[in-house]
Image 1 (tube, rainbow, N blue to C red):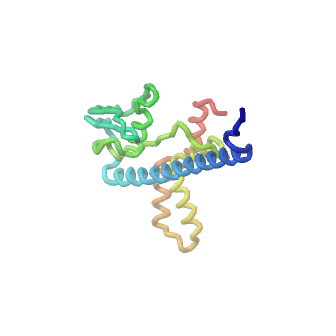
Image 2: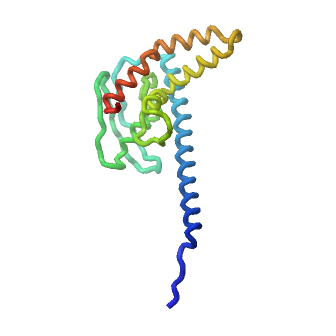
Image 3: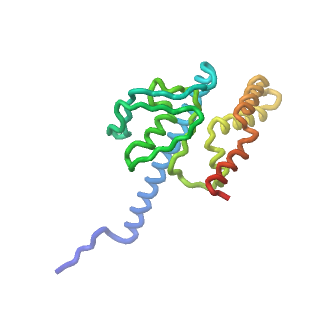
Length: 197
């Protein structure tokens, strides 16, 4: 009998594996870029709603909403959600039940028209691409509003005599309002609570 080689040479297999890894990396980078854009859009939506409605001071009640998975599979139908101010909640369920999809819908203000947009929602994805940042910096970078305000502050200060003093004052006021001076201390407390050292 004659044996036939399957799959080609070792070099061809290595090249094929490299291309597959490159595709996966570019897909993860594309998803990360889309999420970053979504976070900025959600932040703008929150800031606009907060300007119009003021700070949220009530419980969240969303009634009779539907939620589908990204592939169109029905996850929740005619569902009610109530979140009482000051309480903490956890989601438990089997894989594919829709826990992450529900949290993403809340964080992107896509859940339902009745979900209040003047509530600031921060979502930490369960999986993230690794990089060279330390855990503290990763956590601080996750606060998109803080990062954008600090970036704008640097740009305004770099403008020298041409800087917009009125806008710089508004940036400083918002930084104070969100507690930017204490952001690192709060992040350290969060990380210690998660057993980071």
